[in-house]
Image 1: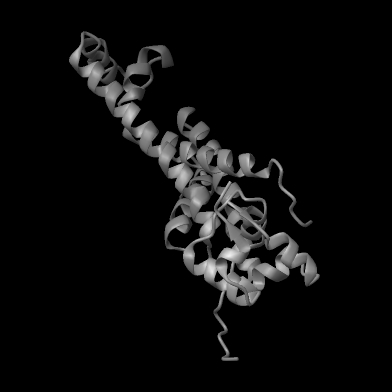
Image 2: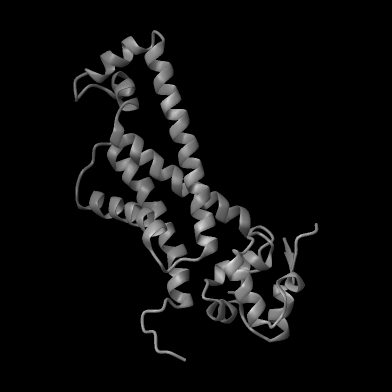
Length: 154
Length: 64
């Protein structure tokens, strides 16, 4: 048998599944930190974990078919959410809601959250944070659904 | 899709992790295939068939 030192082992492949949960936790915490305007070293860690999971789902060669199928559910959820988000934006721009939304965008930075709510809708970074959470939610949904009737070895 | 993977594995007294190692997949993937939650790709189905020295259709049944 040829010597292939960098061949992924079963443990390597299983680690991808575990890392996805770290990414999921990171995405939720990162979203919370962004919403409350908290910035610090924790922001870097949580966002790093969330983004790392995203990138690993596409460029990591230590994954298998099943992991890809879990991620594809997350990707499907993201596409649907993005479609709904853009449709909502289009609807907001094409009806009278556009006026208060425009005022919201121009609201002062320190204004209370209710006054800034329309501005949050058009916050691209917030939308990205939410989409990352939705990706992991889709992944988790598929994983949990498959655990029913599961007969996994310990 | 129904399959005989769990029976074939049990006959050889392999754990899911041992089978996963031989198939170059994760233990989670073996479990998902055994329970019919995930259909393997064609290359993986061929690897499974070769490992057990059987035809793919003798392991997997697409008729529900």
